[in-house]
Image 1 (cartoon, rainbow, N blue to C red):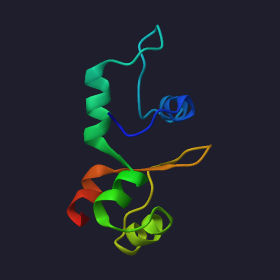
Image 2: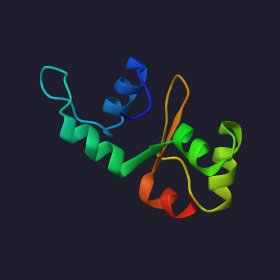
Image 3: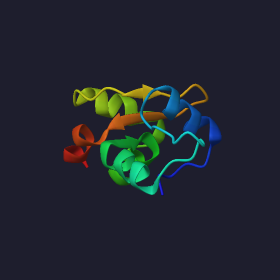
Image 4: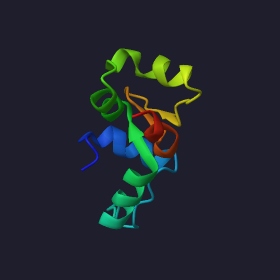
Length: 87
């Protein structure tokens, strides 16, 4: 759904307060949809903009958009409402 399958990304999202799991460590579908409405991963930006993955940060930075969070094992997430007008 979000374009990633890494447990590490999930853990980073929880640690950063971007996702809130239930006490049993599961996440509701509604929470995932809310996350997807609020945030966009760099790989989706690259796919939709035609800008390469390596150039996404600079391209968005040129438009005043900074990363919301950088994952420890690689990957970046941005606030969707700042990025969508550029796509």
